[in-house]
Length: 150
Image (cartoon, rainbow, N blue to C red; front, side, top):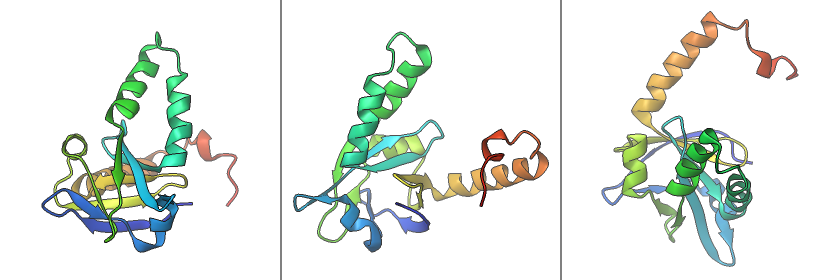
């Protein structure tokens, strides 16, 4: 389970460091790999290879004549890229993915259970402010959380 938030930086080669506490989760057969792809919210998603395999299978089984399904397939499968975590814990975020998410130097890595969201720090901060304002102003239609007991 990936949880928590980390503020990170990208080096000049487009690499970020995976926090130490998560590196073992990406290791299989003595290789540390992850899959990075685009999300419709203009952030990136990071999966372990095993989690990605399950997601990719579900995406591939969506109906190809459904317009929304094709969009999601193009976005998630089309942008999906494997990246290896090196001996120093760094992984490359390819240029097309950095451009898509508006990532420059500062990033936010946000644990979301079976995956991470990777945001440009500026976009994350802007969206968080907007989300907080909209939640404060409109809790009346929150059906998604009505059954949740914390």
